[in-house]
Length: 158
Image 1 (cartoon, rainbow, N blue to C red):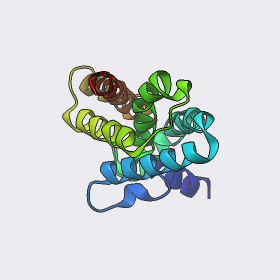
Image 2 (image 1 turned 60 degrees about the vertical axis):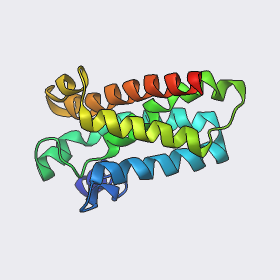
Image 3 (image 1 turned 30 degrees about the horizontal axis):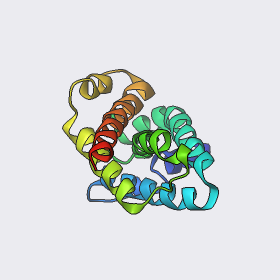
């Protein structure tokens, strides 16, 4: 039963089982959860969501690799963590000043996160080589950091 729960969590409540682009589908689900979670609960939701995703990624990584192989596509809880990190740029620049996250903010964060997660620029790719849960999670965290920087630049210009 515990193995089933860990796989369910690792798959982002099942979103990682998508036959097409599970990482993108998982990121979409994360974006929707973040958007509505912020509407209902405010900034503490983004903090809790990101922390939950990071802790759950570590807790489920070994089970996911055992069930699905190295860096499994079905494991998207790490994408959830990366999406959370990417939107911390909004939190620091706008959210703490009382501005609500809108759909444009969310879409820019999503596009940048997926771009850097797929492209894997310097720093992102090297994280994937780390063993166990660290490699699975840290490449998405670094992609989220890059996305946050991209997000910040866009909204400084805009």
